[in-house]
Image (cartoon, rainbow, N blue to C red; front, side):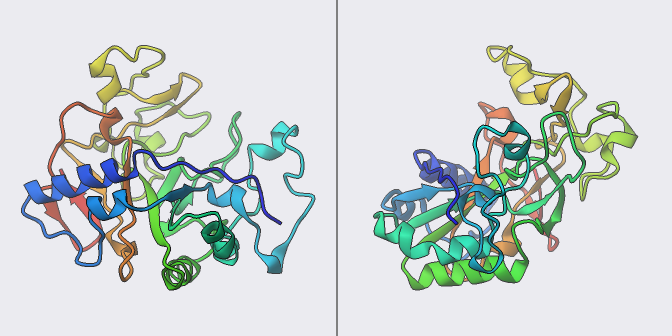
Length: 267
């Protein structure tokens, strides 16, 4: 079963360029296996939402998310996995693509909200753990290996701006942030406020939360605290990094100053 595909790729090279420039400013060597921005600009990238792309042959459920009219279903997991993607690489290659850009791979909050759950990958809870709905770390590495055999590069979406929302808790409090891994202290985040529709206010864009008052996405203070770098998933020659929405698309690029062995970058 192939779920509804979603593809795009216009800003991938530019995002990679910003990431590598930040490392260059810090005199930190770029992973030797990563591809450069010029190389990425020559690739045709198929962006997909992992959960919505393909269920694995070994675990087909044709009734799950069968109708795009069922709002309850489409706000929850539909069964797409890393294995499902790997099984459809020839399909992607036959379309003329030579790179894929997959959803964020980390563990999401499992609790229900009025907007469903984090099937899309943008509501992170634990940055050290793979989203079990997508598969295992071994499944992810196997996907990259199979893609490379077919001449397809792999880019993993990275959300550096915020963590996932929590319904029923007061934003900005210790109780609200203590379940995040590793950013479980209030000083890891900007003081609570919501951007709302005030996109012309640069301070709000850089310091306030996406989402609404009913379900805000807690905004990480990426300037004075920490940024997840995904170095642990740079397997062989993938060069997959996309930094998504850093600091609310701040106008100032803050260089990475230090990379620790845990996969955390201090800014």
